[in-house]
Length: 259
Length: 259
DNA sequence: TAGTGGTCTAGACCACCTC
DNA sequence: AGGTGGTCTAGACCACTAA
Image (cartoon, rainbow over all chains, first blue to last red; front, side, top):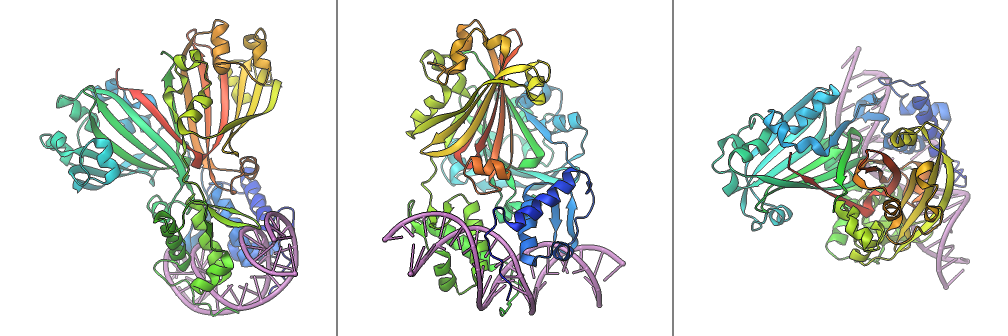
């Protein structure tokens, strides 16, 4: 059994160790791309048990400065220039210019972007989605589920839901590439006039499943964003449900002060 | 020593246990206000070691459905009637109605709100703030630092920075209570006409210091929001730097589609 | 195969809270 | 005093990755 020094410290040993490692990264002793010493090496260096090092590494991972992969080790992440999701990404002029929102943003920051289509096809609307779309729960909708990459790593999953009667005559929406300007441009081309987009955001810790899909450490913060596209008739013609790695995005919204 | 069954399961035991407990809460077997069985009781019930239960409870806490306090135990949280921070909180009509934004929101959800003033007075502008305010770094500004409570627990710290020449003739801004409509109403009363508010959000894990100020578990997600108040002259007359417990807030923004 | 992280054990001591 | 969570130990077995 262990000597069991106990928990009677002002600041726990594992926090001290975590802080030391984080400091080494911030100070540049460990640079982006470097490997953090292995857990067994840290056990020796600090003279503590494996469990304590383990707990320290959980803290270090939570700082977002490090990424750990099973059988490999922990690597110092290169500070990614986050993508700014500003509210003018939905300007109609961008669509007329032929750019989808996410591409326009990627251009600004010079990062490589990629989209992987996970599913496009009919689906029974989940309850919450059906409610937002104003259709009955379980009604058939078109679902478009994508995974977005930035510089090769997944940063965002997005699923768009559109009522069947809205999409049934727009064949482009059933293909992987909806064409210039994205799906909003196609909807506009079919006679829908957008009045506004309503975005709802909540930040929380990633579940186990989510963290694996986005290649995050379990418990890393994610942002859950749901966007509704509302037409001038007051109809919600699309609900987009998005989950983003929080450290990859900064959100910016402009709120007019006018009454 | 332990029998060391090892980690060779598809889904780890601690995740299974965490899911079971979360399910019991979602299903209503454990209701808000109920105590979760103690860790030692869970050890018996599930026939695993303390460490495994401990890890399971970390997962359960991450779900936000439970709150743990040291010598007491874990209690199922009141279904957090999160405060919706919608973008219409800055409508001029609210200010003319005499309500500050945070009070107007609290009324909607029926929660008790409290504000504690931590500091009001002159301060040398931090670099990032000075940049946003368009003043020189280190220039004197008025800082108003508050801590917001909701149902007795701290949920948000906010610091407003205002250029000295803007505030020097508005004595209300130096007092704890800036009067009906809040500081924006006072600025409007002094001739400033707001054009827009620009909010920038980023979610991340709380640092040790931040988590203690907001009474969060270390590493719990927080939202860092910086708001600039822009007048029709294009001047930023206030920068408000806020840190919020992520599980207490849902953010909503309406984005006009017009070009 | 060797090294790394991931899970688990059985037990210890400590700090906090309530009675 | 007795229970609760918080920290720590020493060791085990497993899964993943790379040479």
